[in-house]
Length: 385
Image (cartoon, rainbow, N blue to C red; front, side, top):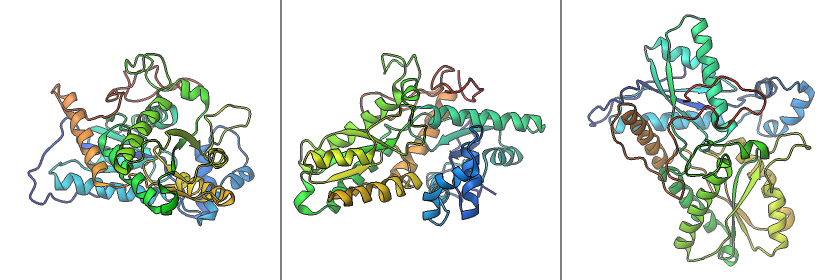
């Protein structure tokens, strides 16, 4: 079962979050044994007609780690941390966990939520930014799962996805600390000259351009939210690190990783390994990789950065360090609690503080029908206006 009820609060007065009676942690999922790798990749690539032999080749990085992705264990840790935070602060809200591509599957978790008597569910997706894969596709998954429950005659659920949290202080501040800590890992002789490379998942350029709410007043033009949001976070971290270390300009470059598409389709660049080569050629004494696009140290961090990028840096003779992701930092779990209470207040028609730093302000609560469109064909999505 994916739910273990929150422990009883220790000394904290119980607080409810009406209209919500449950929180769903919604994530990508990953294989947990060698025999899981190809079936997992078949789930990820369903509908694209990729042969099993090709999937075995694609999954080689999973086999390097024993066929186990770190993401499920990291989600278990986040689940426990959220329950602990909620209990310590008296928030009486059970927390469940479901995945897009591996057990516990989303539809099974929603069945469990319905069977437990809950009807109004706040949803935290483990992706901080706007974009099709990180937002709308999860809402499509929710719509599909809810349709299955309806076909099975189960009670109707209402699900509300919480807003993007990329610029919440509880996400940004742990990344600032992690970047400073990574700088300290470098040899003293290169530390002050080290440059910062802010990394995130590459996506097709067309998907990046169409990301976000076309009517978002913070953007001033349709689309482009995926890159704009990452750049805003990168600038926040770079400025704070400059203040903390006394080094005014380490650069503020957004670079990309984990490309998986066909070679003829333009994806966001530069790739982190190409960027390291360029930095080395430009005389950079060292580079700190800051994975702002990821919530935890899952496979795309462990392999693409800690394995491939580190190997490229060693080949170049370029010192590198990698900042940690937020993981279960208490500031992040507190941010999730704040996002739940903020949204609950809004649903009740009450004023609430909406924490956000940087230049873009807090994201919208409810996605527009036209934002982050499906690149293949329109599909129903939950939690939109």
